[in-house]
Structure formats: structure tokens, C-alpha cells
Image 1 (cartoon, rainbow, N blue to C red):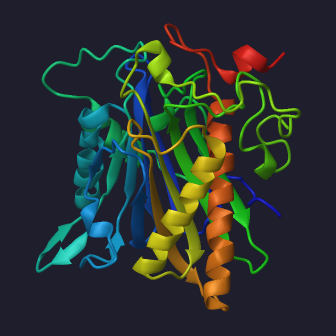
Image 2: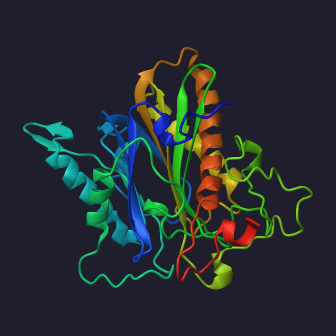
Image 3: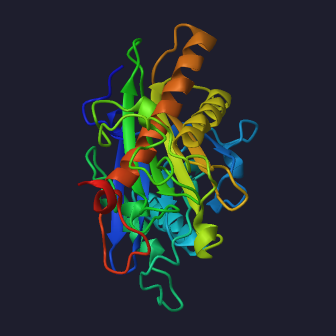
Length: 335
């Protein structure tokens, strides 16, 4: 097993990522942009999603490719980040051709970070349209993890969440990567221990190298959530997985479905009625899968592993800020 050179989703050829962060707002936006329009789909397993331009990603719908994916904070207000990215892409000449007109296709998902201590008194106009544009203007192959972009003010039940990413190069040369904003109802750690649920998938001490919890603490499977702090609704883990394998829209859908296994491996509990857990899947279409279904099985498993690792990395790299409602992993366990 090996990660790509950056251990980021941008190890997938043909992808860039941009982040915009507002520390006073304690929120932000993240954009994933393919060099050329990419085949994409989505799988939603949480009971409380917030989305924009999602129905068109189903395999039976007409539009085959998208121009960007946006992850943002701000709950429903944050959907404006997708509009900001769409407007900027239109200025740059991207989009689905309809006669003389181009319409950029920018599926967007949001998380709820309105109760994290940031200043949300923005008045009539939300800041998210500008955050989306700023994120797009900053795209590149390198980007930071933790309290940046859509993960700026994210939290879990016991620790601060954040933006995570990881990559995996398969034996056949295909690359798969994941990016995620972790704002879960539950926990990424095993009980109150420092160990991550995702530990069996860890590459090269990328989130502390502590390994699996052994023995399991007594509270390992206790259902401890943000509801314990009366923060109902303040949740959602939103993610994207991507690969350079050539996929149909239906295969991208299956990749998104399989990637959810990684979310369930890294968070407890997951896919609750109060989470909006969602995974986009994208293909930059540069490598042919030679062994059909067998390769799809391996690709889906790698996507799930990447997502689990990315979730742990997002929590592991979170940075403290004034007024945080919960500590970071490093504040609590680094010693």
C-alpha cells in the first residue's frame, strides 16, 4: 500500500483544490476543480443533507460531467458558496454548452457550523458567495489540512473537526483520493481515548501512529453525540472521492456508495437522522480499468480506506481558536 506524493486528493492527476477561510466567522469553503469537466455522481446516507445541484448527478440524468464540487460551512446559507464558484467559472468560460450559453455545473454540499462560537451576524447578505470565489481563485495542487476551508469551524461530539485528505496508488497504477470536512454528530476517536476508529487504515503515522485501541475502552461503543450538549442539528460529514480511472456515471455512483464504508469505519455513530453525510465521486478519466468489476471492487475499497484516513487526518490537524466549544485532538492528547 502506498499513498501518493502529497497524500492529498490532488495526487489524482487533473485535480486542484482551493480553500477560503474566515477565522472570525469560524467557517469557510473548499472547492475541488478538475482540469477538464469530470464524470461525477453522489451518494447521500445521512438524514439531514443540505445540497445544491445534486439530482443531476444520478446516472439516469442528462448532464454527464461537472465543472467543480463545493464543500462549505454555514448550513443552508453556505449554499451561496456554490453560486460564487459558478459565477466565477462562468467568467472564465467554463460550463455545460447550451447553444451560445455556458452554464457551469457546480454541485455543492454544506455542513452546520452556526453554533461554533464564530461571528455569524452577517446581516442580509451572507459571506459565502465571496468565500466560494476566493476558494476558486486559490486552487492548486497543495493545500493545508485541519481548520481551513469548509473544515474551519467543524466539530465532532468530543473534539474539533476539520478538513482532511488522503490518497492511495493502487497496484495497477490507478490513483484514488479523498477530501472531507468532518463535522460529525458522533466521534472520530474510540471512546474518550486518543485512538482513531480509522487506525487500521493508517499509512506511515499520518494521524499519530497510535494504532488501534487495545484493549477497547469501556465506553468505545457508547453513543456519545453532540446531543449530549444540546446541539441538535450541528452536524454533517461532507466528502468527495476522486480517481483518474475512466468511469461511467453509474460506476461513479457505485464508487460513492462504497466510499461511505470509510465514513462508517471512521466515525461512531454515522449516517444518523441528524447528519447530512454525503460523498461525491469524480473521475478525471485518464486510466482504463483493465479488469472490469474486479478493478472496481479494489477501487471502491481504496476509496473507502482513503476517506477513513482523511477523516482522521482532518481531526488530527485541527487547530485551536478562541471560543471553540470543544478542544482539538492535539490539545487533549498530544502530550
